[in-house]
Length: 303
Length: 224
Image (cartoon, rainbow over all chains, first blue to last red):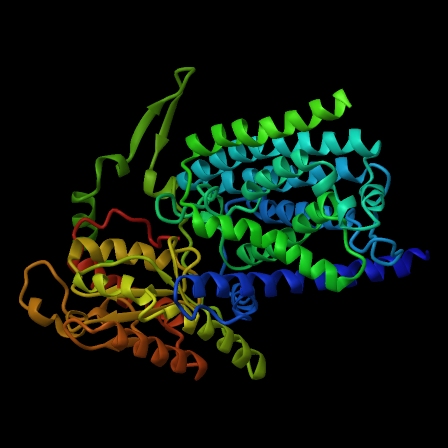
């Protein structure tokens, strides 16, 4: 396909994903409010917050890295998007996916966190530092079961290309990794809880005791960039899990439905369970999901 | 600033803020003036609003997304948590609590303001970014209320900070606070809520008033 046409479709895809991310955030906040017997925010409130943050008049900086922190975070989110095949079997919506995209995407998932750590560290606020050390420690523990699940998939499908993993799952619901490799799916979905930053794994942002983690010093446009990234990141990470474990999507409707349900899994657990302290969450992640991940690999090796 | 005021500030300067000399690792002497060296000395500037439809649109967005600094000064702060309970549910109006002054746009002075607290309020207010709004809650912020002759509370808040909306009462119920938020929204939408710029324009007057009551100032020219 013509490279210019490709770029146009990538930008269009990014626009759709961003808007779906913002609307999904609104819908989820509304559902959470209804669960708490409140009317809750307007569904389009995330848009208003974004406009307001981009229109703050005065802003101050703590140095170059402080500027680059949100930029790195955004490039982490957009980086995952760029290499993620969105719609199975479509040349237009497969972005820049290639043979080893799964490795690159796993790297981009950590890249944003590291950039943010550097930027927020220069902010100099002690709460930022506490939030960063907690965030990086917890995210390392989240990556381990996810990596094990990815390795299990690589053994199962003999590939590290997301498109080929999705192709291998076509032909009915029983071909999904969810049913062909349930242990890897469990390990990944438990680590997904941590990656989404909802309770029980939201001690990084912990608004009551540690206001409010890494973005303490970020305001105005900086915060707007972080919010934009979060909207993109929530959708693309849900799409990644959809591609790996739930058979991918054949059209945008299926993508929106599946990404919503996958994201809702983290929200549902968050509504039911209280928050872990960081010294509880890391051992938990390194016990239960890790064991499932190792079992998934061992069983595949025995076969 | 008068000499008398300057002398008074020097007198109450905290030990860690006094000029001192530090011996470096190789025996060199480093002279430190903490208030000059550790803090930004710049004063804020007036940030002129845009004109026409764009500013109206932005003001609409600002009014529909009021992020309140989670900070209570007096007894009125007990009326704030119920706002976010199912019964009153301020989220409906786009009101949200933020735990850091950098991200918040609304400061609620919830009741009497002791001189000691006033200093913290000034620091928090100056760390917030333009545009920012102040809601004064309860009679104590209007004329001192039942504390009007107290030795360590201030009487009129708008001598110290530019106030956008007063909510009278002792104490105002959460419904009154919600109505105050709606008044603030109207004010923002009409384009009159330029308290942040007024504060910058009249900074000298506000500073004089603030330093009259706060003896141990101990702060840089502006708390960025």
